[in-house]
Length: 160
Image (cartoon, rainbow, N blue to C red; front, side, top):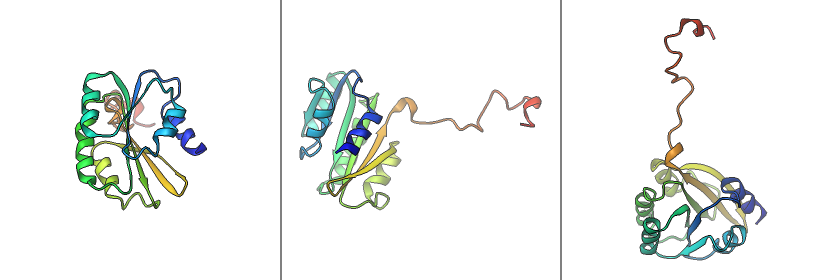
């Protein structure tokens, strides 16, 4: 539990303002999240239709979408995540819960990375492995250091 709280604090401090939308069908992580964040800010949703309504109508700052290892329609959920990330411009988190620590062989891993999510952290709690992914359009693409248009034609800096 302490590891999960530490990760939540690193990715989203308690002082963070704005509403937090949590999509968790099984309610496994909802208790941890509502204890960690201000309960008045947390909105818990269990079906896709309500998530679409809230993300468009409300001013949601952060969305946590929990995908469990026993998810029956994983490809439909990934498609739904791909659509919904466009309506949540600030922070969209996906927490993947697995029974083993092999995230690379998980079909969800490759799909989320291809959608622009970044793998940010993982931990183990109560024999379940949690993998955290984040999508934020404002820092989606980082500019590499070698792509520096300011110094490309400056001979004085070529020797550095």
